[in-house]
Length: 72
Image 1 (cartoon, rainbow, N blue to C red):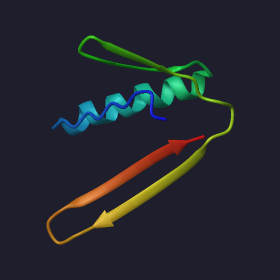
Image 2 (image 1 turned 45 degrees about the vertical axis):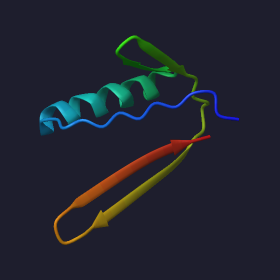
Image 3 (image 1 turned 90 degrees about the vertical axis):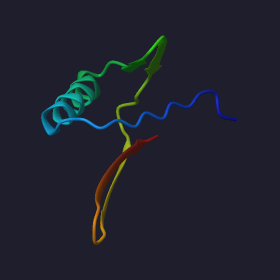
Image 4 (image 1 turned 180 degrees about the horizontal axis):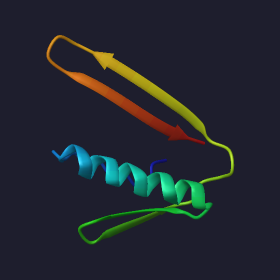
């Protein structure tokens, strides 16, 4: 049963995208929950000490995609 889902798609400058990835990485490394805030919503996601990581790269004629997924 799904409790909550947040999908957030934005167009960002490359530097802003990197900054946001750094923030997530820092929270992941800290051992604390990962906190995601959008509008008036706040998600606290508890992360165990061991996670599965999936990296997927797609290259098409006009578009490139890198997807990084953590699950547990």
